[in-house]
Length: 132
Length: 132
Length: 132
Length: 132
Image (cartoon, rainbow over all chains, first blue to last red; front, side, top):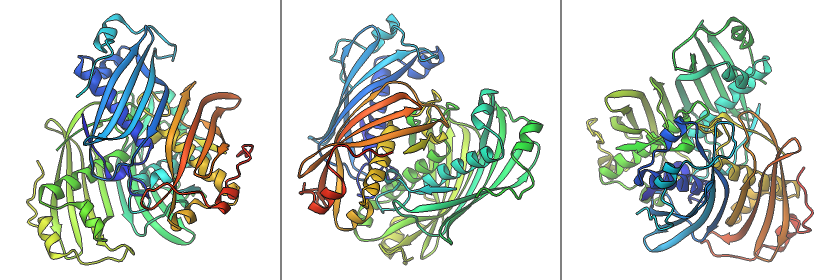
């Protein structure tokens, strides 16, 4: 998917502020989920939520205002309760940032729950589900 | 109250991005409500929410990274269903921004409801409630 | 133009937080400027900046997570130093929010300057420049 | 240092959105730098910038709206060109989140540069510099 850097997302260095990469990755997960037939909004209406358990981000090169970036989001591993994603953010062929996250499924109390089978199907699990 | 401009709140001009003024004003309303004995989090647990119906902002001078600003939030008018606030953001004596908002009370369906009497008391209504 | 509400842009009510409407309007101005042949990033490289002098927003109905919204941005008035825009944010035919802003052109010192003639041309000024 | 969760920082789950933890950590670094006699704004005026090279965040428990949190920021390692920080965000004694980051010093071209000696002194380097 493609994302254009908004002015409000830059900082005083004139570059994309590093906290906004996490919101891009979240958009990447949402669009990957949608592309696979899932609907995260519907999932929340059922009282199931994905929460980020950990994230590891390597910033390689900066991104500037108004640049049109490409984000690839991939499921790298899936267990009954967790999904691992890998992210690669590029400008053309140049890799700007790579990241890996672990998300867990919880109910409305925040208790970890098994990802329902049909959701497990929806989110792939082959580890090959590419988003572009 | 005092607010220090965060790096993430600046933009490529090196100045506080204008959308963040609205989050400052919201912090101002929360702290005014707290200073008057209210607790907005508790109010939400009762299924009552304040929503912004309109806001009018005049940006006079820019604010820079790491500057320590003073925000005065005042209730200027209150009716059974609406509260009007005035905001003045300053650096020392210099006024950087002035704004006025109208907030309405709604239930969890988004239907406008009368502000409960005790909340009406809590949020003042004299029009003189200054926050500093 | 179309904008999809990001999860990070929602608040505890499950709705688009009101401060994010201002970032949407800014994206609307950028895309309008681009559609008319301008390039705001290039303009900043020339040491010219548009700053928001005032904005007036009326929130009519809430927007929810993942909703695909339509934003129309229009130049309503232009003087040698200022441009006025009108914004209408809709979900389908339903108007969620309307706003009006005044932006001024400044140099890198923040001093108001005349909008250069070619930029004045680029940003339209007929008052009819619709973005969709 | 203490940070109160803003309404605009929550998401539709009613919890602090995970991207905002990174802005908290940045505030933590700024305040640690200030406590040690540094001034990041002044440093930028000299054409020197700290950029985040990598960050690793473990989210243990959620944080809710209006909660008053405690953030401890510590320098864990320092080389001529890089500083490593550790962060612990707590509510009372309960650890909500832990993180580690590597920041690098660059000039205005983005080229990595040696951290000037006096800055090296300012930012400590004993690895014991606690922020609270």
